[in-house]
Length: 255
Image (tube, rainbow, N blue to C red; front, top):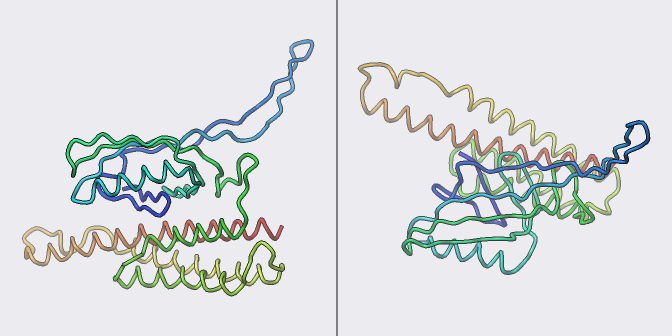
């Protein structure tokens, strides 16, 4: 299942699409010379619009659909995070086709303003503080409200980075020594979260709860724990991706 967050809205269940695109093209200018030779100038990345569809379902379906439409109407740039992709986008199209007040299929198109993993696109470049702040918000969202020990440990590591960033003040204007200190915390936290995910991954697989003739209660308990560990590992990995994104941007700013 894709973890999909747009402008603070975390998509759930049937709201999550079966597929979602990323990528684009490299804008190039071709100079054709005599003799068939040519010179090709790479002018920069040209990202495709990100488009997907889904279905809002349940008692708050209309409320959630209207929240996205309001975001589209406001014309504000928002963050979009999915499958280790982290973008700043503008919602250029949102269409909802309610079948019932509790059953609302939708389609959305986002134009990419900047790619915070593969560097900025175009002339619009966010400050380091904005990039780091957005990444922290997304990283924290994956464990928000989590009560398992793994999710609490992951949240603690994300919180350590947040505290280091807050203590540093403005990262955009910070000294190299200050950025180095924050970077150290970032890499320590990313390593800790990676260990959490690795430990969870080791628990997944065939166990006593799946053996033939096992007590149904034992089987149910085993399956429940496996589902929880899968959820916790996914949350850890997505959080780590965004913490690593912070580290990459801090390194670029120091370089």
